[in-house]
Length: 293
Ligand SMILES: Cc1cc2nc3c(=O)[nH]c(=O)nc-3n(C[C@H](O)[C@H](O)[C@H](O)COP(=O)(O)OP(=O)(O)OC[C@H]3O[C@@H](n4cnc5c(N)ncnc54)[C@H](O)[C@@H]3O)c2cc1C
Image (cartoon, rainbow, N blue to C red; front, side, top):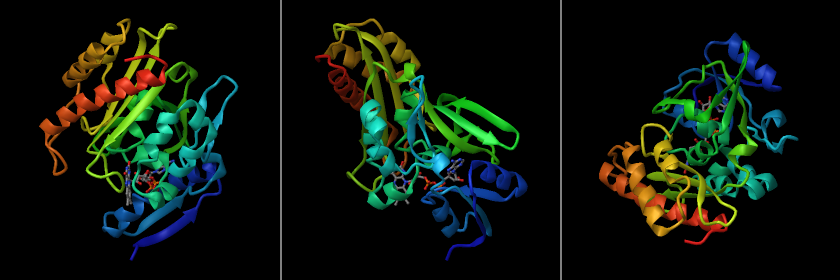
């Protein structure tokens, strides 16, 4: 049984924001793949739900005239992965969300819910951190934009206030143009598995494809929140592409991560994964960027 006292389907984003302000107990529901589990476990008694499920204003992907890619947070994973803009400009993000759960979860679960739940294991988080995603939060007081790197405050916690609706996930042109990316998810099996470790690497090479011009390294489950490794990123800039550089980067990130031991894996195993997955993702990203390694 689901202990739901009140369910209101918002007519649009403005209506959702109003409903959140009027009812201090209201909780948003998009795909419900997290919220309904919390309700069934008794963690949200007498729930007052405000649904944004399928709102056109919050669903889909578009590109603005300046090249910014705007992802609607209520876009289900399956829709995101099949979107032509994602397939052309951010294929690694589409691949990452194609590894979420199984087909039913990918049809129902949304990319916005995946970020807002604050999980370090969220499959969309490493790619969106590497992409410097800008998160637009709207409340009755107005709108603010928070870089994803400042969004997470701890395990399951973010800077989002209860009455704020995530309305847009924005990727600026300078954060994807000229980059190639690769993501790796490590789990004990290929489907229906929460990540033991997630890794996203983006690289921009010089015109002759021999030198690293820019590097982005992002991880899930390598720390209490999804993280970037800015020191390792900066240290690689200007260096020639080589297997030695892949090893150097893979070692360097170990100074910036802080994984924990859990029933899924020990800290030591996660450190080994971080090193190896970084090496593999860097190589694959370089090849995607037209380089040789
Ligand atoms: C069987 C199963 C397997 C799974 N496997 C994976 C997996 O492999 N990888 C993975 O990353 N996740 C996995 N998940 C978790 C889940 O599917 C995701 O976290 C999902 O993205 C949540 O999105 P949703 O739309 O279902 O969120 P909901 O359950 O509707 O909401 C989640 C949270 O986000 C809030 N919220 C939702 N949308 C907004 C918004 N626009 N603005 C503000 N707040 C919002 C809600 O209030 C709630 O707090 C799995 C879940 C299940 C049930």
